[in-house]
Figure (tube, one colour):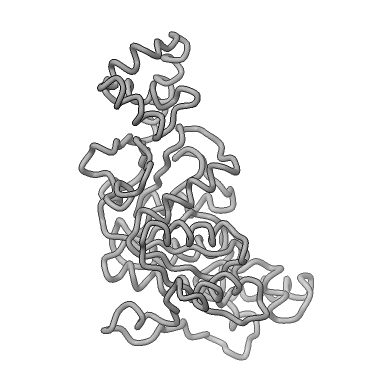
Length: 336
């Protein structure tokens, strides 16, 4: 506990990140010597102690890069975090994983495809790692959580491990805590900023040997994650899409330029599996049911898919919900 306090006092000091920390270790030799040199105020020491107390009360554990439980993929990354905080099933972070990312504005078809891919990886013993954003990330986490057992998915957050963002994924956050892990390099309680999301994307790419890119605009955070994966020498797959859809521009360009392998079905990864099975609709003649699956689809997206206004489909949604055919979740509706 004392050793971690010493390390956090150094890392929470303004201007000290992984690069600076390592240069200080090279100069002073030990954390204790660095701390003596920094000579933090009592107020600062008390603030870091309060963070640690909050973490303890929330069941958040600090893992340093000298700990055998530290994710091996992350450990190999240049300038990786010296300490990460982990909430949930700690053993999850030591298992082999695959990272899956993509746009927050994914199509229903795109989300269902990613969900099925994630589910198959989880069924084959892989942890599915993503960033808990709306759209593709959410589909990846939900797909993994459909598999049996624990330790199925990791969410890498841009804020503190206790800071739920986006708020629409609050229920997903707690599902992941039950059957996976939440990790972050940021202080407990910290709200994410723009730069934190770039760092989050870097670690999502680093933690796994393989990264799968779903729908993504050419200039997007997901494409940044893909570029990090390329820099790290990871195996990169991309899901192709229609050329006229800007959400396909990212993966299509990576495939075209030979930077990613095209991903079209589960057989691209597991030879023993049949092609992805899609959930059969109970009433295929119903347009709304035909567009729903395991991933929540919002009213506005549904309206666009069935070529009706939101007000026109609301009555149908109520009837279908009363019939027990669908249910409302955070972010939209899913099949029962």
